[in-house]
Length: 583
Image (tube, rainbow, N blue to C red; front, side):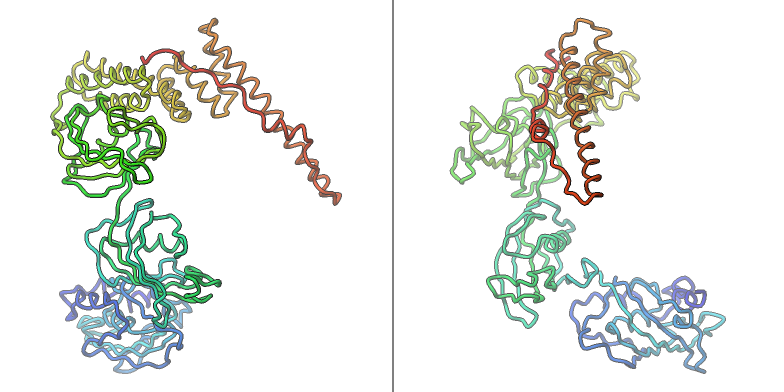
């Protein structure tokens, strides 16, 4: 192992680029060539093929590929051996083209094919220079390596199994690549290995989705996620990543055939979740990029242009210009949410699964039938930078958001209420730095109220886990908070944690013996727990019977019909939850 280090890797640490006569950058740049033509070796470096690669091997390693070799190294002057992986019984692995081995190896290995054995005669300026690698390699020595290229794993081999190779034919622009769910537009040209064209079309699809009649999703997704805008990639795809043993494209691709596709990424339309609940209920597809990186903020005026169409394409609203102060609820929930994610000049196409968000009396959009909004952000007022806000400003903003949250809650606009209460916490996030004690106390009270109300709103939205999380925040500091105990119990009931639900309700009733809602929910939780226990007992009983019958060679018994019928029973009615207005 020591000999290997001194013979191959030592040059990187003992001889700098300035000390070597060889230009490392020039040598490695040549490895980025995308054709398969053998590159001319540098002057002084010679290669003699001792054993040809099998006829089936035609690929050569490129920069970034992991190369696996056996070798013997000798001095040209006297033939003495200074290093040998074969003698050690260990193959040698390295990454080609990043300076881990001497330049003569980098250039020589790049011309070899899998299974080939070659003799490389390397002059000192491509080896260890005038200093050598004492004690075995003297300064100024020409060295000879007999190298067998056992294998290499291509960085272009996307699954590292030889099934799908991707080579960049034309470099793309920028640095962004598509993400899962983004819509992409591809120009596609497909052919067989003999050059017969079998496919030519434009494809529009979302990354990760199946494209009927085309390549399987796994390979296509892997290729597209690594592409930049306007990039063209050549993909050589084995049958198991292409059309399989059955073939495809109406018989143009025979079964078991390898196909070669040239893909050009023309457009990427990024998808962004604009929903207040961050559950992809409102998705924006970027149709046109905007300017800069800022977007409208609450309590600032914005001007937008809105078009609305049915899913069939029939227009409902065309290019309606709207000017409004963001965050006051003057527009429907879709517009209020979407505008916060639009840069100036950006055009977004928005689809929403919640009719209550996209219905608009002003725009004449009903809550029946799927619709598509297209919104362009024309302009917006710039909000004060957050670091310019005083502590008084922050508390006033938090108070305003809390008040609006209460108004929206009473109006039944729960999503806007949720957003406002989140905004309260954000506005006074850093209370530790507040020096005014009275102001700090008010900020902490606002955060507490927001946390309480977030628990309540999430219950109303049936977001049980989120409600539980917010209740836990309060109860960590206030273990006896009755509102949070009751709300947490309600969330636990719907999450099926009946024991914890009943435990919290017992604590509520201890403080408020006449709390009818708590007693009602406790009875429901007790009934639900009994039903769950009975079902579990029956399941384990049947399982034990099945094991016993299997031991006797009998078929497992079916559960009794009446037991099976009970499994479909609806659970006890859920508690009504808080009836109080927002805190």
